[in-house]
Length: 129
Length: 129
DNA sequence: CTTGACGTTGACGTAAACGTAAAGCACTAT
DNA sequence: ATAGTGCTTTACGTTTACGTCAACGTCAAG
Image 1: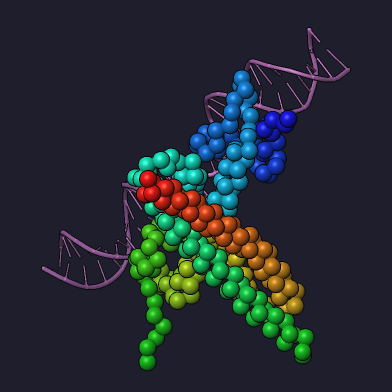
Image 2: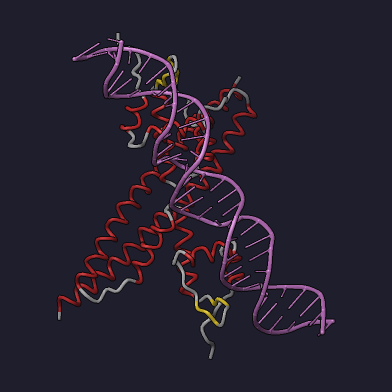
């Protein structure tokens, strides 16, 4: 029988291409809470999942504090109706935000495409002469 | 005959929902270069276009310095072949970056949808009992 | 047993992106 | 003439997201 795999701080840092300082910073802000064996940190799959979410959130330009509230949402208690309704409300806010970003990215890609076409036209004119 | 419209710093700031300090900061970094009439700044349509691009870039999480290189690209000289090829190369880099972000946003929205479904299921079970 | 390799906790430093006075010019309105 | 409104520069303050030592613990290898 194989027990659940774990990782050291150096391993997760290398794997996600960040420094150990960064990983510890995220822990300071409460974004990840690795197990402790004595004084050493032990990272589980759950921590890696969270790290992935954090870094994606960062690529999307969210501040770390906001990222924390988002990924905490996934682990929030949903036993009572009021809790569930709160979570569903939060989900809606997040979606609104993300859909704005989706439009932003799509617009930017479209503009880039138009601009590229203009450049290619210019290039064609240079060839033609 | 109507001459080209212009705006004051207060007007553009209000319109884009930023402070005049922010607008001036972007000028300090060379992202916009409004005309001067005496000591006063006069903003033209071109400046507003750039401000829109800047803010969208910010929503996408790009640092201002990178935003500057991007929007400068649109005004870069494209007279010679080498210049055009440079610009086309830059466009490709940008597109690669933006497509990564597109995937990120789409993944995030998808995950949010799955999570919402789980929550709604939980809510249904509460109703059903 | 001591030397690395890797880990730990402070604690201070820094770059980016503005915020926030402070102090002064320019024009208009009373 | 002076008071007010809006714009200007200068300059230090703040927050976020880490970087960068310093100083020390721990465990396997030589």
